[in-house]
Image (cartoon, rainbow, N blue to C red):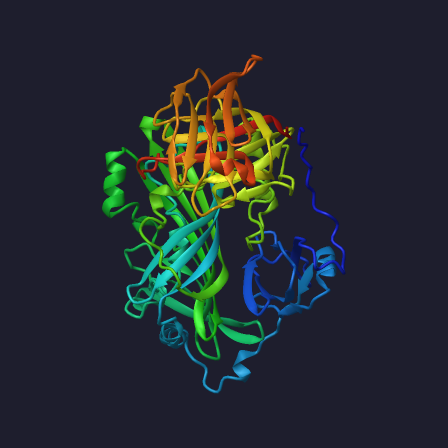
Length: 612
């Protein structure tokens, strides 16, 4: 029986259908001007827990799953907070949310007005006292966009687990899931050195790691501070203190604004940019980064930056809510014929704010800056994030992704798979339908070898059956060539439902340590793998497995031919049980360098699974 795939679209959102999983896209605007409010804080109260996001640059946010939500709170500096109760979400999504300006008169409630520097000094003491005293973790969503002048060539997103060691002032990060869209002509651009610093550059803006110079008591003398008009946020009043570096200071420092609570002097937010007074003193690179750039003949010049970081109180602990940064950089590398004027924009939002550490991130799991591009290798598909709360992409970001796809000559007509497919290790794969074919892209390192498992999609079958498909394998970032490193393979898999020990048959094509095309038959019994390997001429073959009782036979044929060639047959006891039958893909590497990354696209067509 040939399986057809269902094109998936979002259904209309009905007011009384909250038991269903329905995404909501909501706009937040200024009530008076109707302008979008960027960076508004969205707190989602659900099943006695709090998660959330922020509005994007268009003032929009998305809730991917409304099931069980008690209420949603929208807060913005200088505006009155609004709380949206259950059964108002449909109206919220249709009409949007408008926030009214909050008038303030701070001097009426302050007996003795404080000077700007007195406010700053109190803020430093109070914010330090409010920081968590024990190690903790949270989950964050991260987005990065890189462009050269008006030429966009990279969008990357990921969800990270972040753990903060408050004693040693360290932040460790582990990527839970990630994806990117890259202009293939720039794919290897930052293989040598990544100029934006990556997700840890914004994650370490948290005060638990370090206070910036303008909030460092030993360095406040380098700045001039000025008290501005106060503002309201979430029903509380906040001092606003602007600052700039003091004239005559020969350093590249910040200028900006700091928002500080009147009630307890903790910092709510700061917004900064490089001070024009310090621009002549900007340091491009230092330490090992400078040495590395010199060895690779990289001419790297920092032109400027801006940062925005917000905080909130959770259980009386001051935690970072969101952070963003933009870096403007000149990047030249004659060996690669690169002469770029880069703008690198990063965004991070804490989706789950404050949790105790249950399992410390080990060195194998730890995120490494050199792997920024390497560890975000998945294509963009509609269902990728599931129920994660993310920063909703702007129209511009969606346009960038679409334009990169067009430039890469990719078919943008893709949809999510039909629900009848099941996943094993879903986070290892990006999977989508493209016309009548199914596409699998490994996004994490993993292998079908011995007791190891990687990603697969499958259907459960019983009795005798046959399964066949055509597999076309290529490098994901350049579909005109083959995968060129590691063990990157994809094909048909049948697997025992009993997961006590690994039992499977994998018939696949791919690489085996070099770019030579090979066909693999891998039988795994009780966690031990073996099987033949043969060289083939190209990465496009028909594959078939036939199961009769306890016997399994493996066949293949070249594209355009009609005769199936038998590789071998096996007698396997576990074939008498319920079987998982479907597609698998894997990317396994001997080392862990920046080139040891998944870079493979497997297209499965003419798929037939039938009981005999």
